[in-house]
Image 1: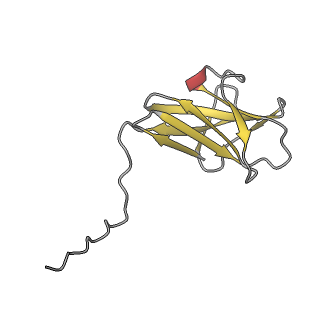
Image 2: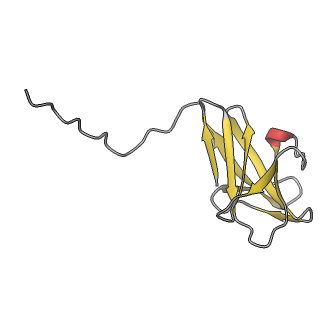
Image 3: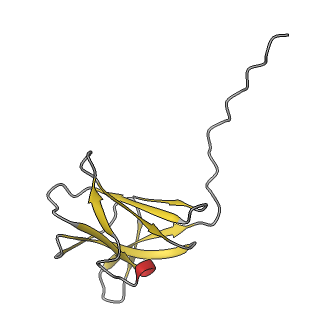
Length: 110
């Protein structure tokens, strides 16, 4: 899963690989550099990390244990130039609008 904050221009990558020793995210935003964005395992067992990214559409993939390539199940997929697939996410310059109604303000009694 990828969450993007347009104010900070930060993408947060979060994924689960139970038996992984190390996970990195590689993509167009870091020139497919395996060392640029290693993820850290959190207490809940998920792998998580941030990357500073300008708005745009980006292909990416996870590298697990330096030998295995994995897609993000929560993201769209596209076929790459090698015939395999990459995950895709769009970093929007505009914050998503919440669909939840705003809480009604309580009126003070006079």
